[in-house]
Length: 104
Image (cartoon, rainbow, N blue to C red; front, side, top):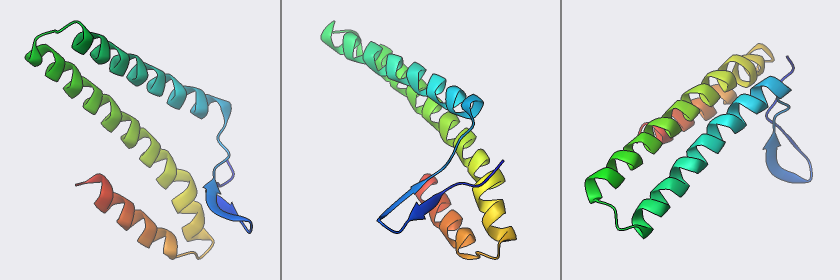
């Protein structure tokens, strides 16, 4: 697997080439989360009980956490490890900053 997370000279946006299996797995998770959010919207429109809605919000938060864990693991195994092998120690600092954001 080639790394990943490289920007170009024209902009500051980084990109990662994902294989189809990884992309499909991530998109499937996001589609499920999107469906859950639409379900909550329908619950609010239907004047459903607050506790029921909050329970569903909690499920979405858990699903997003799962998505983050999967994406973070793949990032560390590909991008970060490749950058370290290439001598880019800034990747460790970037990872530490990311972990601080995720652990708020």
